[in-house]
Image 1 (cartoon, rainbow over the protein chains, first blue to last red):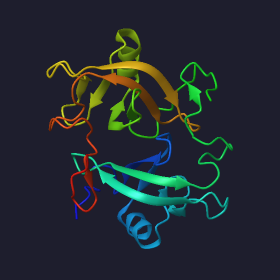
Image 2 (cartoon, rainbow over the protein chains, first blue to last red):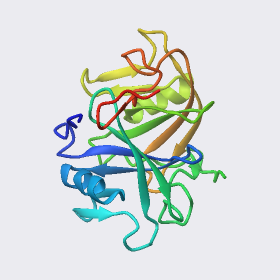
Image 3 (cartoon, rainbow over the protein chains, first blue to last red):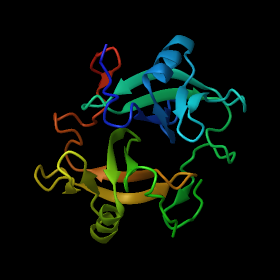
Length: 109
Length: 109
């Protein structure tokens, strides 16, 4: 088991979320140790909400759960990549992915 | 042009890097405003190195440049997704992607 380095970012590491079915990058969340443990326990992606300062099981309100199929760790042990099966939409705007706009502000498919 | 919110993370935003050709997530870097401007100017992914505290044009030493084809911004304006053509390997270990291990420590293809 790789020991994640939670020390660089106030106990949080960024977590890239990718749709395992089509490779689309869906969102970026943050995890602390507790949220990683809960993700492992439940099989459902669970983050640390920086705005609410609480554990956040994605989909608990919306029903848009993320079923975790693979957990990868980067070479520095300080970033996580989740490959998930996404129920519904990842973005609170209703878009499938949070990355639905170019830097120029144009909406992409 | 979307105004990136650099305020949440000490002037830095995380930047997910994806291979535009096969969808592979290659790495996560950090950008400040200066590195984003340099990325736009040069067309080559340029980050802020947190360890060296300096601008870091990826590939300047290794030759493994990242040619930026698309820049996307998430719904909160605080995360960037770069789609790139990657020269050589993204990871300093020589792996194509920095995410070459599972949480259990097994190497993946």
